[in-house]
Image (cartoon, rainbow, N blue to C red; front, side, top):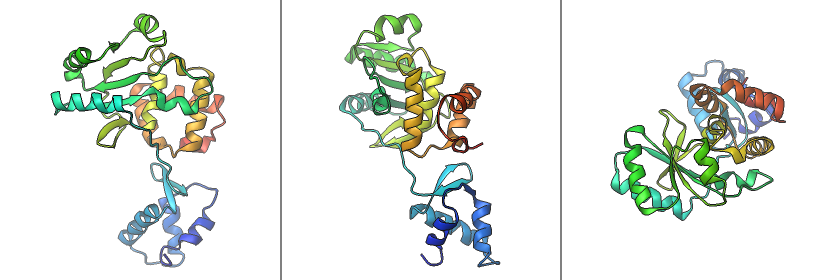
Length: 248
C-alpha cells in the first residue's frame, strides 16, 4: 500500500470532493513521470481497498462505497421465476415498495410489488401474472389507483420498463438501482402517492445519508424522464442534503 499512499490520500483529501485530475496531480508531486496506465490501475486498487469511492462521474471522496442492498422477499423471487420460465428473453426489473419503509416516519397502508417489463412483452406478461396472482394492475391510472391501491391490500403493478433505466443484478434478479427509485417518485406521483410530501423529504435525506448515491446516474435518468429540474429544486429547497452531493 506504500506505493498507493493510501493513508496520505485519506489525510490529504479528507472532507472534500476531488477529481481524477486532482488525484493524478497529487501523485505527480512524488512521481513526475507517472504513466496514465499506472495511475488508472492505482485508482482501481484504491477503490477496491475502500480508500476512495465514486460519487459522480469523475468525482470521488474518501471512504467505502455504501451500496443499496435491499432484501429480496419470496414473492419477488416467485414472480421472477415465473417470468424467466415463460419469457426467457424478456427484460424486466422488479422491486417492492417496502424497501422504502425504513426511510419513512409514517408507514404506508400497503406495500406493492412494482414489475417493469419491456414494452413488447408487457401485455403477455400481464396475462401470465394475472392468471396466477391476485390484485394485478396494468399501468393503473389515477382512478384505478384510488379505487384499488389505497384500501390496504397489496398489489402487483405492471409498467413499461424505460430504455436505459438504471438497473442492477442481485441474487440472480434484476432490480432498479436506488437512483431510479428516487427519480420514479417524481415521475409517477399518482402511483407513489403515499411517498409524497414530507415522507419524500424523509426518504431522500435518509437514503442520501445511508448510501452512496451516484448523482450522474440519477441526473441522466431524471433528464430522460423530464424531471431533473424538479428534483434539483426539491433537493435544494426542501432537504438538508448538501448541494455538492448533487454533483453540481
